[in-house]
Image 1 (cartoon, rainbow, N blue to C red):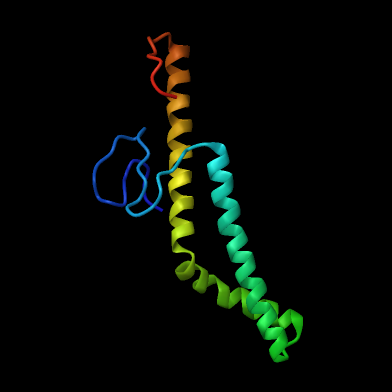
Image 2 (image 1 turned 120 degrees about the vertical axis):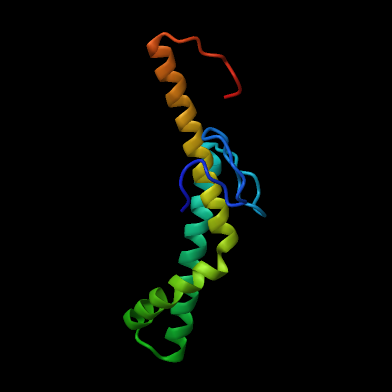
Length: 121
C-alpha cells in the first residue's frame, strides 16, 4: 500500500482528494462501494480456492490435503489473476479514508469554533 496522499500515477495530490490508480474505475468513497469491492475480491479468492480444491479432489487427493494445497497455490495466483479487483479495492479504501479524514477535520474545526465552509460532502 502507498502512503496516504500519494497516487499511483506519480502526480501530487492533496491529502483530502482521493485519487484512483491509473486504469481503475473512480472510487466512490461510499460505504456500499467499499463493501461491494471487499465482497467481490473475497468472493473471487474463495471461488478460486474452491475450484482448485475440486480439481485436486477429482484427481484423487484427500479433501484436507487438497484444501491445503489449494490455499497455498491460490495465494500467489490470486495476486496475479485478480489485480483489477485488488486495485479497485485499494481505491475504495483510499476514498473511504479520505472521506473519514475530511469529516474528522471538519468536526475538529467545528469543535475549535473555526468557520467551516460547507463544501461538497
